[in-house]
Amino acid sequence: MRTHNKSSQGAVRMDMLHGSLLNKILLFSLPLAASSILQQLFNSVDVAVVGRFASDQALAAVGSNSSVISLMINLFVGISVGANVVIANYIGQKDERGIKNAIHTVSVIAVTSGCMLLVVGLFIARPILEAMDTPDDVIDLAVLYLRIYFLGMPFFMIYNFGASILRSMGDTKRPLYCLVAAGIINTVLNLLLVIVFKMSVAGVAIGTVVANMFSAGVIIYILRHEQGPFKLDFKHLRINRPELRKVLQIGVPAGIQGMVFSIANIFIQAAVNRFGSAAIAGSAAALTYEYYCYFVVSAFSQAAVTFISQNYGAGQIDRCKRIFRLTMLLSVACCGLLNVLFVWQKHLAISFFTSSPEVFHYAALRMNIVLLTQCLACSYEIAGAALRGLGYSMLPAILTVFGTCVLRLLWIYLVCPLLPSFDALMVIYPISWIVTGAAVLVAYYVVQKKLFRPTSLSPILQ
Image (tube, rainbow, N blue to C red):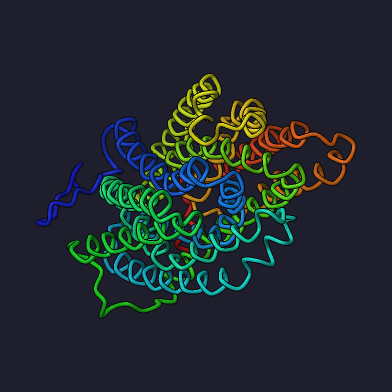
């Protein structure tokens, strides 16, 4: 491969195996971060529009669903990480047959997982929100939003798995362009349906579904017009068992880790709910900025996964080590700068979502405690991504489960009854980030020392 390989359709693929790493990691990560931020803007616009033009209850209804939505989609988002690793590893080996089989297997997984989420979401919306102690003045709106939102799950999954395929070849720009257009559609529909037609949470949910339909259609079009083994051919859509096993081997532990995060956050959300609708709304507003910062970290972790997968497949061990160091440094620097910026400008940031002094109080508390220390999470995100790029997905998943979920649950049930305040609840975030980061970093260096030997084989291919 050359540095940039253009097909006849104009697609640009990045050569991750040769040349400068810093420039390529930035070229890969920045559009990916922008894409994720735009995707989060779907929900942010939902929150802002209902907060400004509907009611505090509508704002709380949309915000209280974030942890539920994350819980239900994270398993399959994790599997898309497995798809990225496997396809990137095949690219490193220049195995065109493996690339083709993996892409068509992943496409079937995308449609199947989206349909499963649609059905499950419709049936468990009310029971899970009731179990989270969602307040009576919020729950009906929250259930309505969640059920409409999950009608778009097949399209959401098609986009995410399709974007994962493109990322494996180093293409993060076209998914970004797709989401720019989808974000504009979502914003226009939200404003129209909420302000003009007074549809409240139903309006913003419908806007998100339509935007997901658009992004899925565009990503299918892109893959249908790819060249060689990257082209999506409907006639070849089938599950290839060896590729499915490899994708699940990497993806399922990553997905379970994401689900465990969400389970822990659901318990935290349930604890937040006990402080009332103002606390729910304030927490939701502050959480939006945590997502923006997290997506920067996630972009560099995706770069670590993809670059390390390709280079490990090609046997370039020294580049794997440099990729880890660069992605860690960049993620800490960028996340830390954003954390400080948002907290510094918290009055302006929160004012986009609410004018209520009580809601502002809770949002500011969460930003001062959680957002300001969020860059600590880079330690386990990047180290875990590097391990997955090398084919070790279960180890970081297990460590993260104990370092986050177990620790956070213990805090909620043992410490919070003794310190029943909102800020005491929020302190568990930086504590769990420190503990988990230390554990996963140690694991990475142990595996690196063991694995990076001339006779080592990629565990992805064993």
